[in-house]
Image (cartoon, rainbow, N blue to C red; front, side):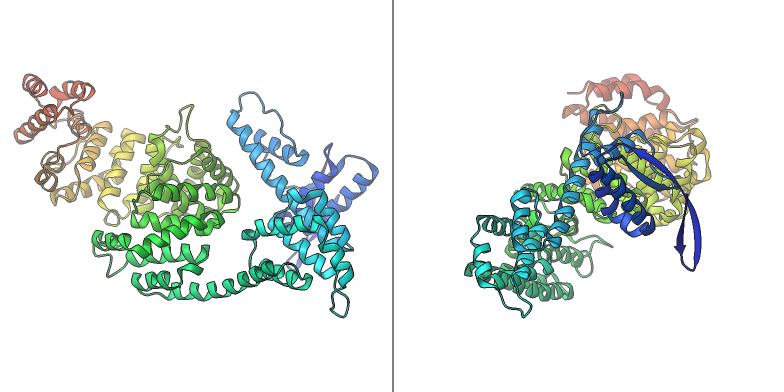
Length: 635
């Protein structure tokens, strides 16, 4: 069968295959007809499918529905998910599917089922011929009502009780409003009023006024509408604020009427202004520590945080994202922050199902920056949303999301049986997106991408890392010192000898050595570069290894503060030198190694595993084993 479909000014024919599946007709029709994607993209097919479903349901037959011949999900998980949603029941997964996948399907099925039920109730309320019918719907399904259903029911009752001349039919109105079911409906509406937008609040106000409900309820409804208007004015003032002090003054004078949007905007604006001149005296996108300290010690700022805590349960995913981004940019670290982060993370989990990739990635990035350990509920919700919207992720979103998961690998490695819920699927999906759209990534983003994939030990296709490396090396001056050394270390972890011999690795290595001469490379970064060279059997050019060793063993700034070399960094540096052809430690560097080993042994930081690694690398790096043993036994 062929259906005509209009596209622009041309009429195209599209072949549809017809399948018959024995499922609940009402459930399938509800999913088929009410899907927002289906409503937008397939109007003609939707109408035909609805007619076919109605005929089949009337006849008591299985529904015959039509699929356009286009690529669809055919994985076992997708098929099971579709069946769960259609039948509104859970099912048994195939052998080998993790139990975690079953939880995902149940959560997704429940969320979509609730949404579909609320949409059904909405249509039933709007189609009700009289107020008594609306109350019957309330009596049968009030526990499934959302905020929109509740305000629609009340508003519909007010309209049905209004005559054509606009006057309320009082006797019928008194009968309806005295009904216990109406009182329960009002209580439900008040408890879910935080879900209403401006239109919903205005409809509640009109309905309350028309039905002459309790005076306190009418006053509260009217106040909510006035506050919405005032909040819009405050929002404009916040966006126009030119300094942190301007924002804090608004908090001081009008903070008592801030809503969730005003609160998140105020925090976001403070962090944004603090990231630019004259506050950002430490460089681009860097805050002056003194300026940030003054901001975070201000009582008005703490009052703003208290508002965020009180309103976090009402925030949308956009407000949650803005709030967390601000806290991460300001590096806030207060005792009361833990409760706020828990509340925001919980709210993000509850609203992740409709989050845009940008906001989802910002939430995860900010939580990772703030050192917050994510809960399983949030991780599962994020994983499901990522699988649905992976194709919409832009380069910054992919980088931020993978970076966050890389930071959390210390909690549970990606490939371990007890790994973070959904992490493996997220990393695999976003890695494919990144590698397919690598030209959209800047060199700096590619550097962060390489580090994240290495930390996650992600599975990569052949030559994938080489493509990322080439992109990062196209502008070495655009990489900061950390990104530069992280990229070289990542190639050592995931790359091959061929990658080490390539021009891109050599370009970045030369840049790292150049910066090391100016002491712009830290100890950990220098050790990572040396280790990568040893791992890839790369022999640096003359002077490059010495420059990196100088940063590792005799870093002027850190040495002046009395900071010791981290034992792992020391081991990595020596191991790297050991595996370079024709390179050994100079006398100056040998003395520095023995000195650092002795000091680490004295303070008890030289663990047995580090000592054994140094002994194994001593001969290859040019260290005297006897003198090394003497340094290791120093107490």
